[in-house]
Length: 366
Image 1 (cartoon, one colour):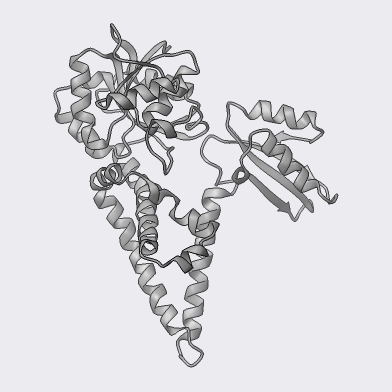
Image 2 (cartoon, helix red, strand yellow):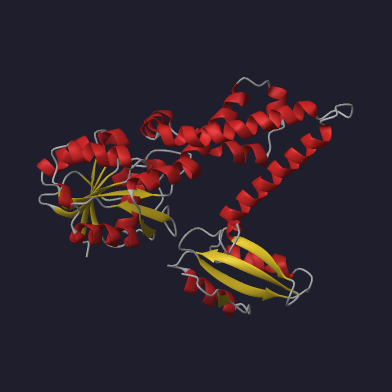
């Protein structure tokens, strides 16, 4: 049971953690080397500014990866909390630094919420930032079960879904799904930095989606990438091979080039693999974010029914990217599948049912 907590570092993740815990009636204290950031976080309702008078149940160290071990040791010396976790997005170097630091290892468990934004700072924080998102925990060999349970309780209070992983496995995974994509977005955005006004005037949602995360804070991302460089380099090395092959294919796409047909095959194969990757992330059945509940609604061919359902779903708090349509050839039926956070799924189901929709929870959904 967590009644009191402290957040050390009141950027986007730290302040969002404070907001999420505070709304669950946890008494949160906010600390930051930048006093103004902590005061802004307090003004937003993430907790109260300043240290507690005695140890809190859990302290969340929300500083860049390279600073975690130092700040953890410092706060343990001050007896800030009974249990400690962090939110650093790279775990192996963090775990190594903590193992070499003068800290009490049983009271610490590594952590990383898989949530964020291209914006930074306490003003960008949201209480629902972690809702339905994965929150990785990386207990060390000395982490006590009581401390792990405290971290699990905090993750639950924040509305996230806990996943326990080894630090190395975590770092390889985030290199693929977070760190390398961020650098690819930065590379594409850098191409636009020197562009003239004419092409920029044509920029639509597609390019905005591609470069969205490139707006992240460069100093923080420099620290993240440096801490996970080998794993990221491996992903980018494979990507570079695809880019080299694609570039050769594009240069061959002339009617008179005897290799043009092979180039078209390569191009189509790349686009198909890209479509498969998109589906692996977005489509239900393998694709919904971990921990999301899938609500299934059978549809008829009545005109406007899909539009009415989309409006009803969005009115119930389901984002547009959490709505999928699925066609069953065996039953010749079109169905809508909605991805809902576990904490609100039942309320969404009841609301849609009250509006006349037949809603069921997909088998195996949790």
